[in-house]
Length: 154
Image: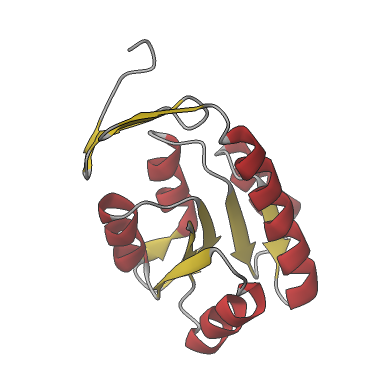
């Protein structure tokens, strides 16, 4: 199951995004603030993140930085900030895409599906044996349900 984390404080938009992206083999973790987003990231397996930049208790840039410390999953920033400097900040922190509000849900779906296609093709670089799992693409290692943190050289 491909899991997408949506961190968007506007409940209607959060639900609308999940509804627009719904498809077989995809599930969603829906957070409505930065703290919930961090909790989902730390506790669950996430294959992609859609992050609002302006959140009531922080911002999506901070969560993006946290994600990039341990993973290269696709991250799309969704924001009302339409200044070029905001977009450059997002890309410099490691965002894979930057989408300004208002946006078409069909265009968002196309962008997300493009990232899913790229990710699924890279999943060929995975080693799995019994309860050991290692993703070369995302540099993630786990034994059973427990994630093991490795340095870049390990």
